[in-house]
Image (cartoon, rainbow, N blue to C red; front, side, top):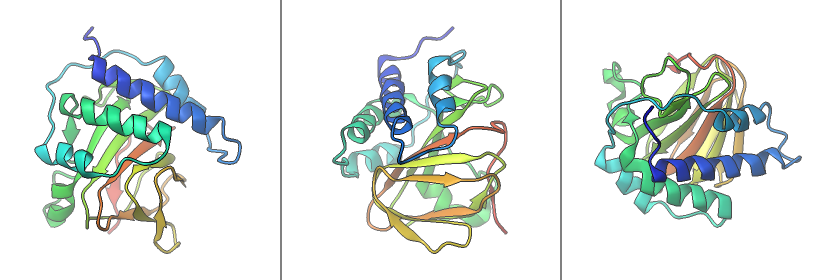
Length: 210
């Protein structure tokens, strides 16, 4: 089994601390967030594969303002260190009509369904992703079978779900997306770094609404 690098383990530890703090916050009442805690505590094999980190990912992470919240800043600092060792990918490689999105939106799977070859490690309990979105990029309306918890780690961006209008969300904000609920994100003058957690249907894919 391939061992985690120190920077990768520090990132997972920082995310675990953030999730635990959020799980303990009764005002948030995030559904099934405990599955993410369990997934990190019982993670499966480390998958082999070469790192792939487009230079823009590191540039965006370096440019975003660290949030003034300890857990969030710790995750961002750990992510800056670990980013070059991770496998970042374009979630819509076949969409020639989404060139702008594909050039400015990146995903890495830290904990994924065992069928996801791009994952760092695996779990059947929850999937955990990090996304980095460049300024002035719209991630258009999309949906998936998986219920999702989203946390804005750094950067203020506009979010929408269902029929709600776009609204600015500060770092530390959590968004809850029910299965197949349409949602979208629009960045403005700064990048958006976010944590996404799927708690069921871990093998599904996101699809852009037509």
